[in-house]
Image 1 (tube, rainbow, N blue to C red):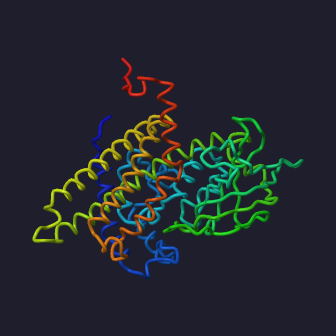
Image 2 (cartoon, one colour):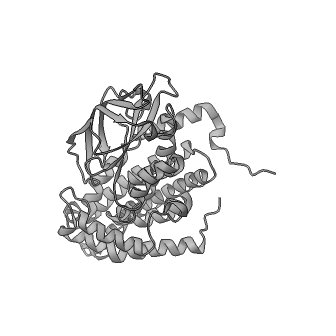
Image 3 (cartoon, rainbow, N blue to C red):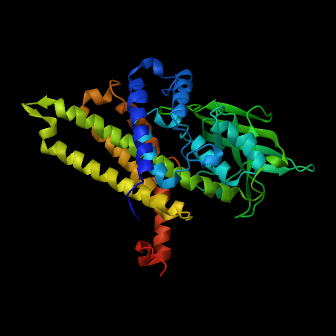
Amino acid sequence: MDFTISPALEDLRSRIADFVDREIIPLEADPAAYDAHENIETGLLRQMRAKARAAGLWCLQLPPESGGLGIGRMGMAVCYEEMNRSIFGPVVFNSAAPDDGNMMLLDKVATPDQKARWLVPIVNGDVRSVFAMTEPHPGSGSDPSMMRTRAEKQPDGSYRIYGHKWFITGAEEAAHFILMARTSDDPRKGLTAFLFHRDQPGWRIIRRIPIMGPEEHGGHCELEFDGLTIAPQDVLMQEGDGLKATQIRLGPARLTHCMRWLGLAKRSMEIARAYADVREGFGVRLADRESVQLKFGQTAMNIEIGRLLVMKAAFALDRGSRARKEISMAKIQAANTLHQAVDMAIQINGARGYSKDTVLEWIYRYARQARLVDGADEVHQMVLNRFLSEEGNSFWRWPVAPS
């Protein structure tokens, strides 16, 4: 693959970087910029989104006909990294989870009528959305075959939903929901994806689950379904296509997480290096100590490894592959690199890093979830081992161009 990017993509990356530096990063130092759950305050978010949209920096992930910039997965890797140099960045550009993955899924598989009703309001920034799949034990987590939430088909063709979901990101503030439920016991065709609006009766939020935080807008919620009725036209794809819908959504969405996490890892390095350049102890700058230089060099290399794995996976997705092996490797590397980078940055900054005088403690708490969300490290390691068992030494093969 060719790692050079086009002048147009470089211009877009540069404009995003400038917007983040000039408009977003300064907000992080203002306590009034935060809501009660340590994300950007909603009124301020509306203002910043209007600025981003006016600057032509909106919904990069979608094709132009759907209101986006159509830069592909490789272009997203370049730009998402720049966006998330700020902890507030992705949501300002309408490229934050879970809306990001939901928009890509709806754009790919929804009918024209469904796009008009369910996708366009998210693209416009009028509503937030949810992907509701995870359940408490003994229901589904990383293994969707364990799903217990059920959809019972009615004589008129509608479905009634009964079940229990939890850790559903954004549910408290979302209006549009994509819900996974079981419609049969078929191991491949037993799940179905449904669309519903928050105002429909038959479901409720049991609680907003307290977490280490900080939180996305709308938190991580526990939901109960007790007869939610969903019309036939609000089935996404076809009955029994839920597993396919999940696979279409989760692979690219995992990769966009990785792109964003690398931006936060780079920001952590920036803060650490800036402090090491000025902080002296025992007559020596931290930046001149070999032990500190080793930390910086190792972290820089780990970030670059993550970038290469992300770009390889993006390259494969842009060429029609599901890229399951590539995405699992990128996910493990990016999640662990973020955690290591911010931990190192706090150590370099000492008590300052542990305080709220920088965003490092925010990033540190956020980073710990990265090794859990969208599949824990161990799940992706098992995925890779399965590929290794099936492929043997071909696991490391180079793709060969047609002659």
